[in-house]
Image (cartoon, rainbow, N blue to C red; front, side, top):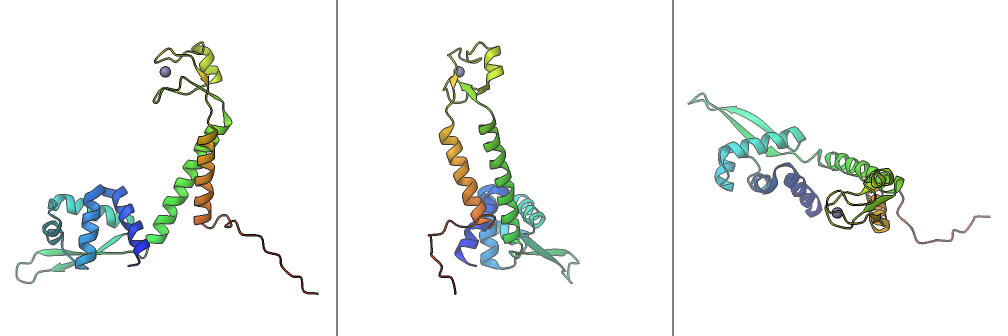
Amino acid sequence: MARRKNKELLELAMDLGGEEAVEVIKALEKKKEATDEELAEETEIRVNTVRKILYALYDEGLAEFKRIRDKETGWYYYYWRLETKKLPEILRAKKMAELKKLKEMLEEETSEIYYWCSNEGHPKLTFDEAMEYEFQCPICGAMLMQYDNTQVVEELKKRIEELEIELGLREKPKKKRSRKKAS
Ligand SMILES: [Zn+2]
């Protein structure tokens, strides 16, 4: 698998099930196909946890399994493998969701002026709310000042632009090129 794609897959695994999911994916990549027990042995993660991770991957469309019956014992074994065909689609959906969230955050930051005591974790209040508290922080009592969110807004805008370029929703800023007109 291409390195970049692999990195994105591991990041996705991290979101899905933390370090243990990353380990399971790495083991699956190595073994190509394996039962939950084999993966548990390989990763030294409890088999119940391995199973939970495998089903989470399956739900996301990142793993497939086939069921094989052991002729002697009559037991069924599930052989798991990675499925990365849907990875670009999944990543795109994830980025679209992130973009939506960032736009909402930007909307929230730009639609109101906030008042804040500048203590991390203390609430930022709208003008009306600040009025109610007579411009004193409801937690520490310090004076509420207009909150300068220029930097936050700039960062949000930058991240939105990057995401939109990644998603192909916005053209990459190009260097100006003069085009000769055919006459
Ligand atoms: Zn405060």
